[in-house]
Image 1: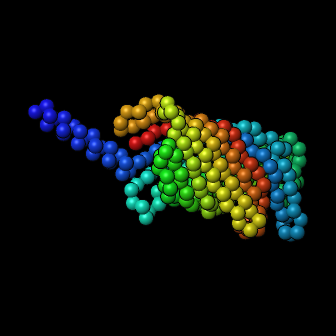
Image 2: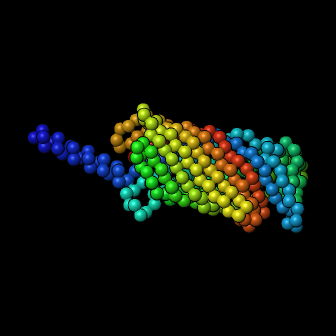
Image 3: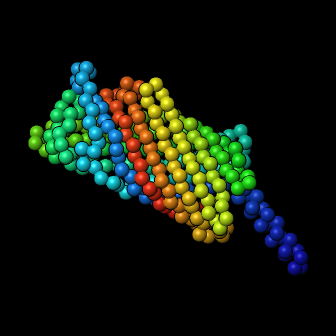
Length: 257
């Protein structure tokens, strides 16, 4: 009887492991401490005069914003795996000097806010899956940038409200190494070049698995993320161009199923 029970338990364990290998899900969430730097360029109502100002004069400071990610791996070779990401990016402040935007001069102490919220839909293939402790993913990312700029002049009460949604197809790559003592390190990059515009988003991080008990593993991650958004408005039929960088450290929790 004991052999029969042992056999049933062994089959059950092997079956569970097979199921885990068939479909794997990981997700993470945390806080990204980031700051905005660079320049914003606009044209006046005639479309003939361009005006550029440095984002530093808007009076923005570092912000702590949330991020989420999740990926699903499956065993069907012909179909890509799926990774989803969301990052909340927004700033608000009071300008330290006057600036020109779309042909209007906004005085010192103008209150403004800038949003660059992003959704990433990534379809990728697993080239190596923890083979010799190495994982390589390659694929395509569709990054959707929801940008918004609002400003109110404190003296004249002149207002501007700009809102755009930009879908940007990007190449995607991820390299990960599994180290001893439940530690993993990885780098991820997304890149696109279109006419006069370039977008790059990269992450370097390390994670540590706190628990390794089926069916859920719990871990912590910490890293650095940088985004360089060089957007030429003419490439996307919009009035505003930007050459900005959003970067900073992040930390969060990870769940693995």
